[in-house]
Image: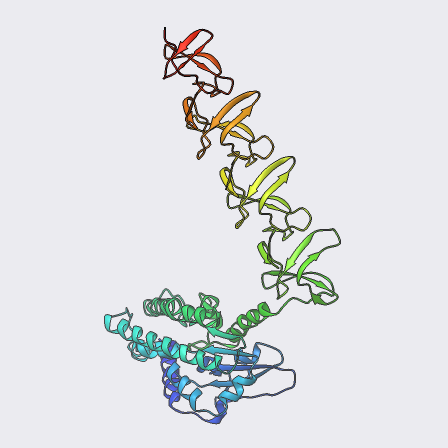
Length: 487
């Protein structure tokens, strides 16, 4: 209970102090070559209770520890809510120039919004286990909503003056786990509040604004005894070192890897190739003969690339330019073996013809029309067929042996004549009337008949041209008008 009484006293001091502000809240250094840090926040950013002299921010506070050569402009004060921070940012003359000169901005605000909404002073004074009430939850929800509005306006104001990294700290739970009922209830209350505000306010706003989240909550979780000043809710020196370390790691992750004089460089999730200190761009053939493609920024490209009116494909893993056949999303494409450009139209490969869609380049199969001619491409391989083919409906077609084009009309094949439908190309069988003359095509083979031929128990005679004789005598036998032999 003694520690809780101390917490109550300290909370009263810094919450009341929020209504007071003097120029001593600033600590500015302008050493040449220093990392200019603009630190926005409340008592945490201020370094409250780290030193006996509380009239100015403590140099032991986390903003000063982010870098060995940090020059910090500390715009914070104990007890500030997000509304008060925003108001001071709008009125203090130092804010805009400081943001314009910043190399990085840290923002750690919101704890007081939530503490005041939860009525933490009254809870600590009561000293009895607490559970959230509907009234408390309503106040915390309203405070969270206002915090969201204020954070968005603060971030907008920062971004209007600078495009440097903004590190947004989430809210940590100052109350550690405990076996005692009252401290345990404070821990559970803190867990609920921090979880909700971090997931529903801090993280979404950081995502949409481009701010970088410094996860203080995870770092402090279960470590409150080590990172919090005894009888307080503020970080001790170790806690501030931890907070600074989170920001330092974020900044380190943003630094590009040292650029080699020549060779491969991986940076920011992309591969680059450096030659004589400069990033290669466009097509580039390595000494081993492999070709790669680098965009305008120098980043190596994979998959499809469009350049100078042609499509090219670069392996999805290695980035090497692909030549020959390439399957992509269940379709086949052909990349020229000389320059890698995607082929379209007719392609002769290993003695076989293929047809590639004139627009997409995808290999076609089945029936394809090109320049008013029909062709048939084998369903599996896509190779152009020639000669006789039969479709799934049992119909026969004849494809030119040399060109592969579908034949129509009268066609002679292996000394036999056939008739292919003028539109569909399907082989005709049975009786055929062509130019007012009758012909008979074998029911099975489709070949044109000549000489005497029996059809449905009647005899007919067909001249050498295949046309049927009628109203005449053949070999002493008379045929009628319908061509049938008259007995």
